Image (tube, rainbow, N blue to C red):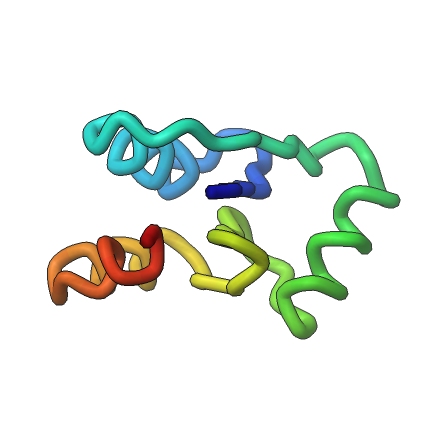
Length: 83
């Protein structure tokens, strides 16, 4: 399983997304885009033009931001995506 979360500076939603993943004992790779335009462009391309952080990917599936992650967790779909 591969979880990637793109984060930025002073981002409370990034912290919430990481906390949700940590609460489930899930390992993730954090990519900080705040001071790196190349990483920001990589994120935007992978996220189909979305520029906000966080942008979360699980096994190459674009989940979206924190609200999206929270919604799929509450619906039970996060477990399906992780398996």
